[in-house]
Length: 160
Image 1 (cartoon, rainbow, N blue to C red):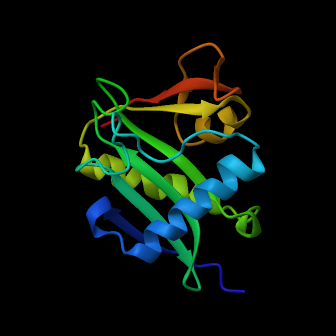
Image 2: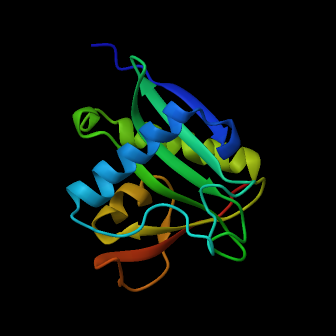
């Protein structure tokens, strides 16, 4: 099977209906169904993250099927002085192939291209600290619960 990934980066208003549907389905499959974490993933009227004018949605396709997704938030959306990457998800059938690392590397490339010289802060599930450390993030907080799942804040500092 060809494991090459085609990456697309889109603002919310550039997503097709099918791309939006596939991205939301992947997020729900991973974060709600697999992790049994029942929370409102979609934007509320008070917090517009997916639809914010500067939010970028990174979509990874294999054979025209969405297998990887993350979103990039501008400084000030989640953290005052940091850009942020979140909703990092890979389809279950595509795991174990290094796709998660490809997704994160592409997300970091796009983030640093869009938000030049900007440090990046994430809220990482605690058990994924080594994964994110592999990409240059350092743990910046003690464990805290987010939607009843242990998380830690992690920061990747800009390096010239």
